[in-house]
Image (cartoon, rainbow, N blue to C red):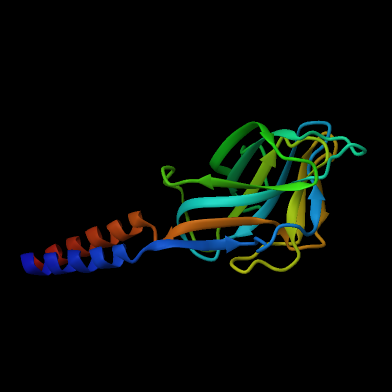
Amino acid sequence: MRSAILALTLVVGVVASTASAQTIYDNFRNAQGGPTVECGSFGVQSCADDMVVANGGQLTSFKYRFFNAGGDFFGGSETQSWDIALLLDDGDGLPDASGATDTILYSNSYVNESILFSTEYEGTEALFASNINVAPGDKIWGVVTGLGFNMHLGLNDVAPSVGTTDNQFYRFGSDFNDTTAAQPNSGWQLQLNAIVPEPASLTLVALGAIALLRRRRN
């Protein structure tokens, strides 16, 4: 019995060691530039786009792109402040920027970050300590709140290479009054990475298998 348990534990350990960080949603362009959609306004505003992940696991990081369309003749600012968040859809297929119904998986705030006029900003969030787990097919909302006047989100003009997204773009706030707009492009440039399979699931598999062996022994 002891040898069987040791062998099983070894097998699960080997499987766990093969778990690696993979991209579970990818809508990033290889090169910067390309189409954008306005997100910044004079008032507080949130913009959201969906990511349906291709696989499940423990999130490790995600990234996104903004474009500062401001300039001497178009207004705007070279310093921006915003909140970035990931929300798990509650099943209605619509984003809730406040997190009242959708589950907030992760959020972070930035204050007075420099984004020069007519340039893109690529943000990266590391989630290694957050222990955020998602399942295959989950719809995750990428939500940004508080971007200033003439700020845009960088879009990709082809379908995601990993995962899927719909053709809707969602904006909340005083200037856009909770509007939904069809996207001429595939959506906001977002990428999600995760450890697949997630370590907690592997541990549960091991414990369940050991319990089954003990039950058969008895």
